Amino acid sequence: MKKIFIFILVVGVFFSNESLAQTTQETDVIKSILKMAKRDFFAVNMDLTEDQAALFWPIYDEYDSKKSKMISGQVSNLKKLIVQQDFSEKEINEIISTVKKLEVQSSKLRHTYYNKIRKKVGLLVGVEFFQLDEFVSTELKAYIMENLSLEFSDE
Image 1 (cartoon, rainbow, N blue to C red):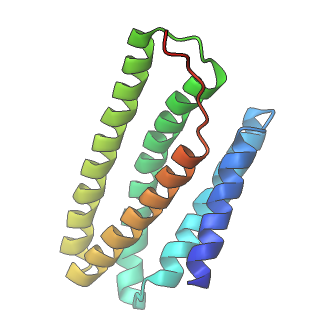
Image 2 (cartoon, helix red, strand yellow):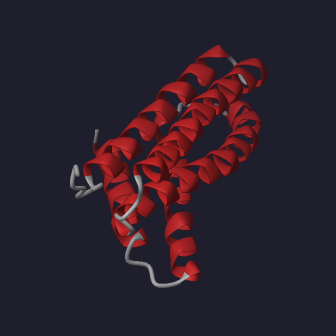
């Protein structure tokens, strides 16, 4: 449980600091820290043999690279709603639709990589990956939504 708490803390620090980052370089450093924390979280919570690890980590790294791009797209679109709150209803609907499409793509990507891991490393490792990634995604989404403060008037 302590491991989960530390991971959530790192995610929270990432998102609170990302909005404060002044430069692309600062944002990249924060993203790099999150990536390492996520990898450590998986490493600590998965009981991989050396052989399994040799097969798992290259697949995970490939997955994480693709997933990170999707998360960045979701966060970028949600930030638009926070920073600039004078959107038309049509613009808001387009942003929400984009976020939802990325969410569906992310879910499909997780399933695709579950299958890759299941076939190359084994069923139990695939299930562990799926469960941990689902947990991370859910916690990340909950944190983002919890800290998303929108003030719209319904005119």
